[in-house]
Image (cartoon, rainbow, N blue to C red; front, side):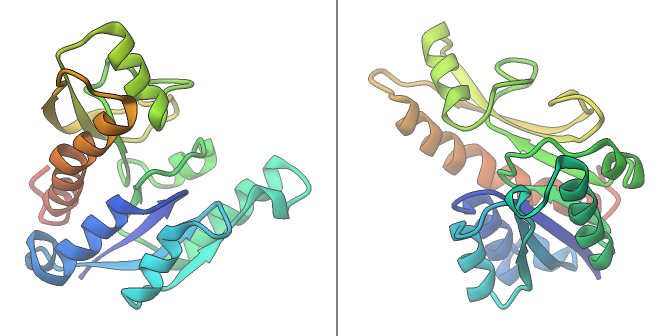
Amino acid sequence: MFSITVLVSGGGTNLQAIIDSIEGGELKDAGVSIKKVISNKEGAFALERAKKAGVEACVVSPKAYPDRPSFEKALKDEIDKSAPDLIVLAGFLVVIPEAIVRAYPKKIINIHPSLIPSFCGKGFYGLKVHEAALSRGVKVTGATVHFVDEGTDTGPIILQKAVNVEEGDTPEILQQRVMKEAEHIILPHAIALLATNKA
């Protein structure tokens, strides 16, 4: 069994795509299981998704700790307890501490809602990515799964999938299309590739 720990901050649609693929898809065939879901936010809907799927979930919030180093240590401790084969950042809006990156080399992946190197790096997350793509006037955007290193969105790329920008798109509409047509497809596929040593 190939175990993953999934880190989330919000609604958890990418987490749901992983859960669905484990229940009856590519990830089931690859022998993948979710060991734990960790959120940095109380009340994140992703926690409800985990609960419904019978997956252990917990919250490690920066607000619960006196300073950043204490929070980062608590996050690392929680990950270490689950001893995952892979850490998956599925809409996790926290910069991963270097101590965790060093402890899990080539064992942390992230999904980013653009075709890296476009619209990525510091400040590019969530709707901001899609706002930037629309204001630049690109005709094609997409999503990227990449390994996490010490930089922001700078690790080696595993998979990318393009999505057309359409007339009349708003950032919200484009975000939904990128999730549905790219993120929810390539994130489970990337995990399957890593689980079966094909990445």
